[in-house]
Amino acid sequence: MKLYDGGQAPNPRRVRIFLAEKSIEVPLVPVDMTALEHKSEMVTSRNPLQRLPVLELDDGTILTETVAICRYFEELNPEPPLMGVDALDKAIVEMWSRRIEFHLLMPVGHAFRHLHPAMKEWEVPQVAEWGEANKSKAVEFMQWLDQELGTREFIAGERYTIADITAMISIDFMKPARIRVPENFENLLRWYKSVSSRPSARA
Image (cartoon, one colour):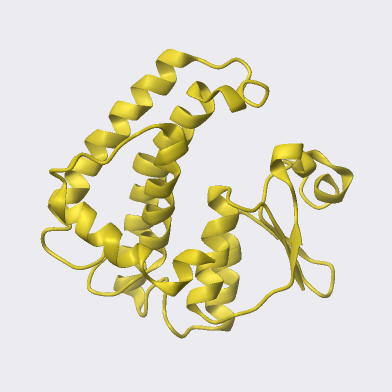
């Protein structure tokens, strides 16, 4: 088994943090995305969409897509539970994970890809207006999330889950996307300080 990894890119990092929380070690194959190695034959032959991460199992089976890879490891190693413990809890975690992906991670990603000069060759064409619009969308969602976090410790309840991983990654990704968390979002900042201080956050 080996994991084709893209360094500090959000999705590869999400999987590494998930694995760290479960104390699972998987051999990594580093892929330098700044050198466009994700477009190499090594990656393309395993994932024609040229996206990372890619998990290759010992029998040659290929798994792509971050949450699918995490789901595989969750089923094999259910403790600690990061994707829910029963039907209702799993649905709640999935609900929050989707909310974070669609309303925070994606807008931050669009802002980065359409506004950052380093993405000029990646995102053709860059549409600055779309990038700016997504900055506003991200801040608007964070305002709502700040209110939600006033009622509980973590995104999906009283336990750390994959939703917290995705949300933390999204906020970290805001730095290159040049988006700031407003200082008055106190609940969100309290939550972020807590989750980013976990050892897994350094994975």
